[in-house]
Figure 1 (cartoon, rainbow, N blue to C red):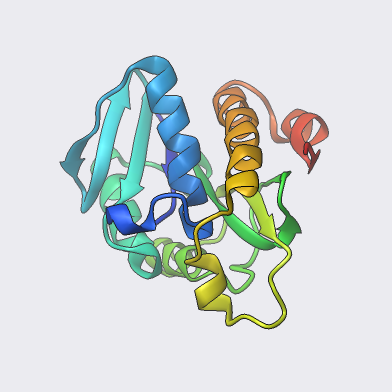
Figure 2 (cartoon, rainbow, N blue to C red):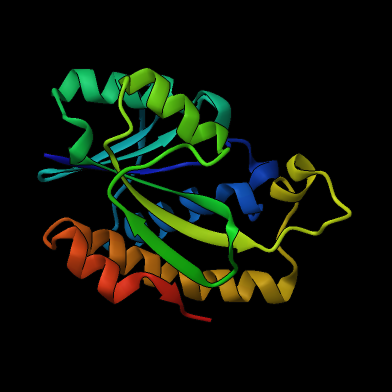
Length: 184
């Protein structure tokens, strides 16, 4: 059993914001497989065979609350998880798979590390940078993509969707070789 987790904020007003990139990618997967979500584990949840999908409804900063409920219910190990989220340090159009690591200042990842008492979970970082130097970080990540950026993000989200699905059957080294680059 493996879980693909997209990070974001649940309210409609956050759709198409930089911080909801993880939701965008998982939504693409669900649409491609015609999978419907239900509410469970403080999240929007779906199960497709041995694959679980989770979009925490706890808001970004408390993402770990939903993740730990899923992990405990299905007795998952941290390495059974792929967390997809926005990364300010990567340029828009860039993807990066990682096997583990620090929170990098990302509050959603910080919450998951705290809840799991581990940082040994897989990540797919989706670049949303560079940050406007004249803008507060919170304002930047909660800002909606411009029309041209959104078109780019749609393309990148499609590639990230394929990467997330490849993660189910491919080792990390091959994933990194195939996907760790700027696509647009």
